[in-house]
Image 1 (cartoon, rainbow, N blue to C red):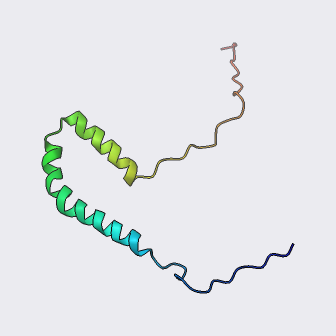
Image 2 (cartoon, rainbow, N blue to C red):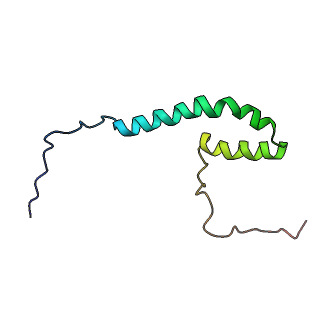
Image 3 (cartoon, rainbow, N blue to C red):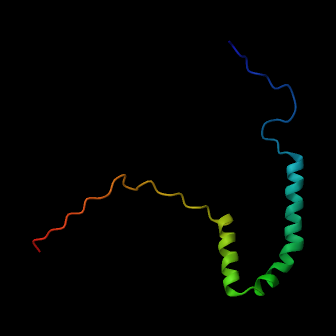
Length: 86
Protein backbone atom coordinates (compact mmCIF):
# COMPACT_ATOMS: atom_id res chain seq x y z
CA UNK A 1 0.00 0.00 0.00
CA UNK A 2 1.40 3.37 -0.98
CA UNK A 3 0.15 6.08 1.40
CA UNK A 4 0.60 9.68 0.31
CA UNK A 5 1.45 12.44 2.76
CA UNK A 6 -1.44 14.80 3.48
CA UNK A 7 -0.78 18.36 2.34
CA UNK A 8 -1.77 21.04 4.85
CA UNK A 9 -4.18 23.46 3.19
CA UNK A 10 -4.68 26.18 5.81
CA UNK A 11 -5.16 26.72 9.51
CA UNK A 12 -2.41 27.70 11.91
CA UNK A 13 1.12 27.69 10.62
CA UNK A 14 3.63 25.49 12.42
CA UNK A 15 4.99 27.28 15.50
CA UNK A 16 2.09 29.72 15.88
CA UNK A 17 1.19 29.92 19.59
CA UNK A 18 -2.27 28.84 20.72
CA UNK A 19 -4.23 32.00 21.70
CA UNK A 20 -6.26 30.30 24.45
CA UNK A 21 -3.11 28.86 26.09
CA UNK A 22 -1.39 32.25 25.91
CA UNK A 23 -4.41 33.95 27.52
CA UNK A 24 -4.55 31.40 30.34
CA UNK A 25 -0.81 31.76 31.02
CA UNK A 26 -1.15 35.54 31.06
CA UNK A 27 -4.08 35.38 33.50
CA UNK A 28 -2.26 33.01 35.85
CA UNK A 29 0.84 35.19 35.78
CA UNK A 30 -1.26 38.26 36.61
CA UNK A 31 -2.91 36.52 39.57
CA UNK A 32 0.46 35.39 40.90
CA UNK A 33 2.11 38.79 40.51
CA UNK A 34 -0.77 40.89 41.81
CA UNK A 35 -2.47 38.74 44.46
CA UNK A 36 -0.07 36.12 45.75
CA UNK A 37 3.26 37.94 45.75
CA UNK A 38 1.92 40.81 47.85
CA UNK A 39 1.17 38.45 50.76
CA UNK A 40 3.72 35.68 50.37
CA UNK A 41 6.61 37.31 52.32
CA UNK A 42 4.36 37.96 55.28
CA UNK A 43 3.01 34.40 55.14
CA UNK A 44 6.52 32.89 54.97
CA UNK A 45 7.63 34.90 58.01
CA UNK A 46 4.82 33.32 60.02
CA UNK A 47 6.10 29.79 59.30
CA UNK A 48 8.34 27.94 61.73
CA UNK A 49 11.94 27.36 60.60
CA UNK A 50 11.22 23.70 59.80
CA UNK A 51 8.13 24.66 57.76
CA UNK A 52 10.19 27.24 55.86
CA UNK A 53 12.83 24.63 55.08
CA UNK A 54 10.17 22.17 53.87
CA UNK A 55 8.68 24.91 51.66
CA UNK A 56 12.10 25.73 50.22
CA UNK A 57 12.94 22.10 49.45
CA UNK A 58 9.55 21.57 47.82
CA UNK A 59 9.95 24.69 45.66
CA UNK A 60 13.50 23.76 44.62
CA UNK A 61 12.10 20.74 42.78
CA UNK A 62 10.60 23.17 40.26
CA UNK A 63 13.77 25.25 39.97
CA UNK A 64 16.59 22.70 39.90
CA UNK A 65 16.18 19.72 37.56
CA UNK A 66 16.31 16.35 39.33
CA UNK A 67 19.54 14.41 39.09
CA UNK A 68 19.35 11.30 36.95
CA UNK A 69 20.68 8.09 38.48
CA UNK A 70 24.11 7.13 37.27
CA UNK A 71 24.45 3.86 35.43
CA UNK A 72 28.02 3.30 36.63
CA UNK A 73 26.83 0.61 39.03
CA UNK A 74 28.75 -2.65 38.67
CA UNK A 75 26.65 -5.53 37.42
CA UNK A 76 28.34 -7.95 39.84
CA UNK A 77 29.73 -7.77 43.36
CA UNK A 78 33.36 -6.59 43.53
CA UNK A 79 36.03 -9.13 44.43
CA UNK A 80 37.77 -8.22 47.66
CA UNK A 81 41.12 -9.86 48.40
CA UNK A 82 42.29 -9.84 52.00
CA UNK A 83 46.00 -10.43 52.46
CA UNK A 84 46.43 -12.45 55.66
CA UNK A 85 50.26 -12.16 55.64
CA UNK A 86 50.17 -8.73 57.26
